[in-house]
Length: 244
Image (cartoon, rainbow, N blue to C red; front, side):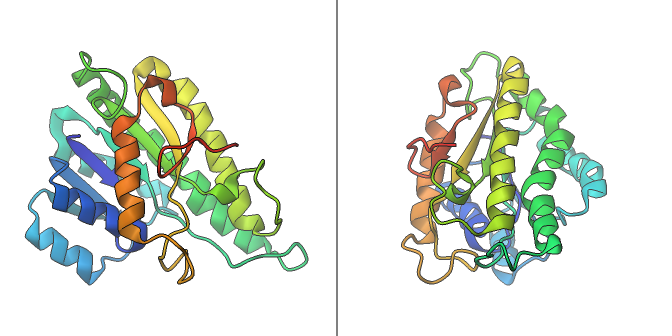
């Protein structure tokens, strides 16, 4: 993969992805976006000339055009090979009697609306990468969009209830993934939803069974193997398919 963009890269899973790509020397250009730059991300940027940090508040969709212009200057005529819509928020276990409108709206804006609108803004760069590598099969060699979802967005596997803001926003993101995969297949852009597993992060909590490195390694191993038949799928970090 030549050019990669990861949103929400200042901590947790996003930061883990940036670390993996720099350590493995897997990308020509790594673009990390975040609202607030962490010291760890600053250090990584100082140590890796191919890592660019861009300020992005995903709730400010009006700024996406400007971000797209900045990214275009970094990737040049090679376009964007991999977009990972990773930035997300969650609420604690929310029962029906306690759920609030503002929780639902915040989760929907960050987890669903932002990935859709950012993908829309970056579509010319993704198409550019797919066209520039027209001799290669559909997949990471051309252009891939990964929407970081969650098993909590699976309607079929919902046996506990609750989590209204998060579940609804991730189920909606999965629906967006499916539509994107249909709309962009003609452009040879692969789209998939990925569940990172239950990971030890600020969002996942201390009781999560997976560490960030294991999750991230699995995610990129899965991404590297994606082929045309995988577009529109909902996958676990280890590549196994999940029910919608």
